Image 1 (spheres, helix red, strand yellow):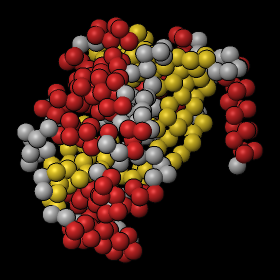
Image 2 (image 1 turned 45 degrees about the vertical axis):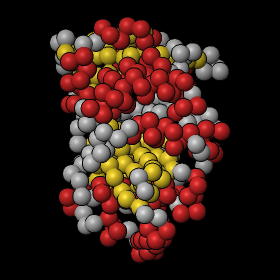
Image 3 (image 1 turned 90 degrees about the vertical axis):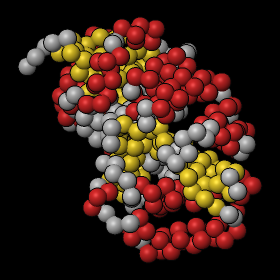
Image 4 (image 1 turned 135 degrees about the horizontal axis):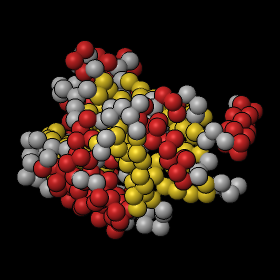
Length: 346
C-alpha cells in the first residue's frame, strides 16, 4: 500500500494547498460536500469560530492530495484529547473530501497517532464517509432526513407521495394561488435579480432576527457568505428559488451544488403571509421542479426531527454521528464504557 502522509495546517496556513489541487479533489471526491470546497471552507476559516482551535487536515499519496477536511481539537471533561470534524451552524454535512474511503480511514489513524488524541468524532455525515475501517469500529447514532435521488426513475413529484400528504400539499398550493398573484421563479430565469440580498432582508424581517439566527443578525455570518456567495453563484454552485406576489418575494430559498448533487440549505418567508404557509408552498414547488431536473440526489440538509420536511420529501437519507476510539488502553476502556452506557440507556 502506498505511503500516506497526513498534515495538520493551522487556519492561517491553509493557503499552502494549491487551488487547483483542492478544486480537483472536491470535484472527484467519493462523497460530494460543497461546504468543504475551497471557496466555502476558506470563507468559514476566515469568518467563523475564531475562538476555537481549528486545523485543516490534508493527506497526500505520492505528493497528490487525496483527502481533506477541517477538524477541531478539544479536551473532554475527563481530560483526554479529542479530535472532531469541524462543522458550524451553516454546515449541515461533515463528509470528508477524499478520492477513496480507505485513505479517509488511514488519515484518521494517522491523525490520532500524530496528535496523541484518544478519539475522533464526526456529526451529520453520510454512512461510510469515514471509510470502512473506521466505520466498523465506531460508536454510531443514526438519524434520517429528507432526500430525493434517482430522479430519472421517478414519476412526477405528487405521484411519489402518500395519498393523504399529496392531497394536503395540493390544497395548500391551491389556496395560496387563489389569494395571491403568485409566480415561481429561479435564479436561472432571473440571474440579474439580487437574490442573496433579498433573501437576507426577508430572513431578517422574521423570527430568525429576534433569535439571532438570521444572516444579518450576526456580522460573522454575513462575512462568511459574502466571502464566497457571488463567486459560487457565477460558477453555478449556488441556485436560488422563490415565490413572488406582484414581483415582491413571499418566500425564498437557496441550495449549494457540487457536481451533479444539490444541498438545500436555506429557506425563509414573509411572515405577513404566515397563514398561507408560503415556506411550505415554496418547498413543494422546489420539489416539483427538482423532479424535472437531472441531479443524482438532493439533500434537504435539515434536522432529523423536521416534521414538515419529512412528510414532503419522498425519501429519507441516513445520517450518522460517529465516535471512533484509538486502539489503546484508555481508548478501549472508554469505548466499552460508552457502549455499555448506551445499551443501558436503550
